[in-house]
Length: 286
Ligand SMILES: [Zn+2]
Image (cartoon, rainbow, N blue to C red):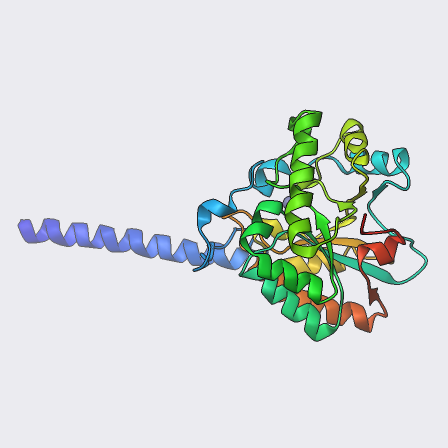
């Protein structure tokens, strides 16, 4: 009796296993090659304290997604003050990198730019600049342009005017102590802006730099995905957004891995890489 029961259970278990295995396999065959959109594991960096990498306004993931329409409105509302692209009659592109410096991704990006002999623009966070002064100096020494991305990376549309200006001034001061010039370029954290905020930033004598090509690298995408996002959207006069550091949740390995190939392909297509002041013919120092 006991043996019979055991045999029956064994048979049932085997049947269930075979059923599941068969249909899993069957389903796998039906699913086409979808891109892997899952964020990859965060690579902890040995030198960096995770708490240093908290962005005051939260991660990009929590803040982004404002409608493109708003950017277009700001461009026509504030010509000569708010920019998201350069002249479209020449094959020039400006690569921009936000949220650095750090000691993991920023140096890798600098190595690639050096190898390719390309100058780019870095929008730096003041409190990170204070942590990695040597990386800031390297950015400057290697001929790249530095812009202000606030002291603590808050979402400035949630701040009043005094708080907004304090964030920008503190960021400017932190950078000034290292690079010895006052930058005239500002990029708002998360690209978050209203017409009122634009006027508040203007009072501090800044040009506001947005972008028209978003690599979406803050989503911890693969190199293939970052490459696709840039190459599918880039055109003459484009300002491309990538990150050279992120919040503790963001893995930029894919973004760094895509960079060299993106540069090679665009060079082959006849594009020239320039800094923001070169692309827009504006001053970057005050
Ligand atoms: Zn940012």
